[in-house]
Length: 175
Image (cartoon, rainbow, N blue to C red; front, side, top):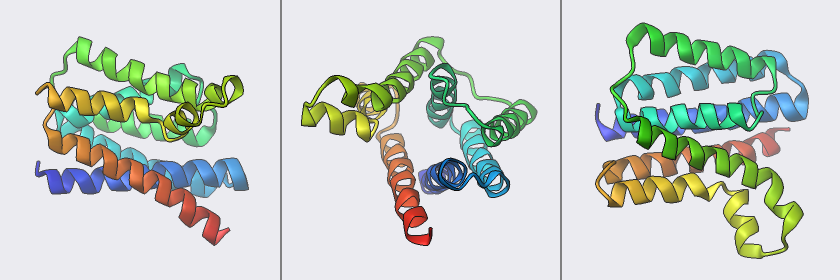
């Protein structure tokens, strides 16, 4: 799959993920949160089944959030079921358990740090680092520099993050 198409899937996934969360968390709109969650599941699953590097990232985000107890609504469960269904039907690329565990720990670290770090320190750098969930970004960059991932997957992941943050801004403007 071309990295342009993959970047588009990452963009869509990031946008739909954040918009779904905001619809549920801020507006308690289960119906549209579920619709956007399912759209996120489709974008994430298609990226996952067509590119091993994307699979590491999206599976790690899913498991990291699950372990951090962030799967906390029916819309998340529906999104998870759709994502898993698509991945099971179409199959997953072959993955290294070690690389997957590294990515899961990074995603989990982002979620825990995002929730807790500001409660324990006033350090501006650490607060920004975890506010914008930079552990996974650094890990993906290191894996790309070491040749484990293609550098383009790092840019795809950055596009996910930009879309995620943009969805929050769009949500605030529309509500």
